[in-house]
Image 1 (cartoon, rainbow, N blue to C red):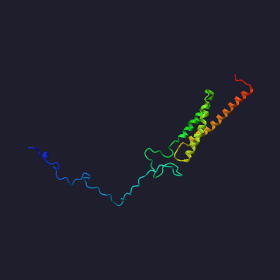
Image 2 (tube, rainbow, N blue to C red; image 1 turned 30 degrees about the vertical axis):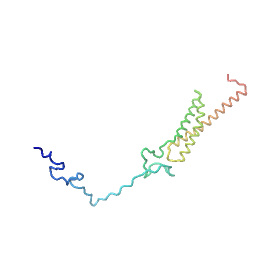
Image 3 (spheres, one colour; image 1 turned 180 degrees about the horizontal axis):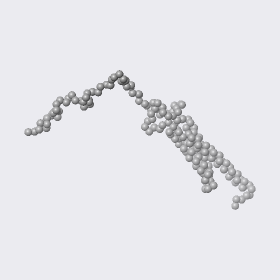
Image 4 (cartoon, helix red, strand yellow; image 1 turned 30 degrees about the horizontal axis):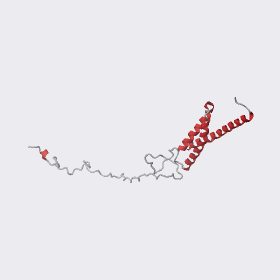
Length: 179
């Protein structure tokens, strides 16, 4: 003879009728709502926060946390971007100062003479763009520093060129020889 469990249909329940058992309900019964004199029903949840549309920053925006604003994944916070023109003008200004300082050692004034006006122009453009859209870029100081280094080094370079031309003219008119 065969075992009765092997021949029993799939729906057979050997321990009784379990059709009343709901696996999602606790054995002690459904959960009761809290009650009592101190019970206060919870309020509705707040509405979901949305991001603003991409575009210009509103007038008067000071940066920082704004209620109702959450950045999208990977989006930069206001004031955390660096303007590339500001960094470029700062680097060109540093190159022009370094070439002036190293001139007595290895005569590399020419790169500084060419870098200084570009630092001035690129820095001035970066300052205008950063001030036009406040709160977007955070390196206004670098733009101003590069612009001013370019101005000062352009003036110094112009004076140096004027002195060299004056020296050449003086040597040409006086029959003075450097040899």
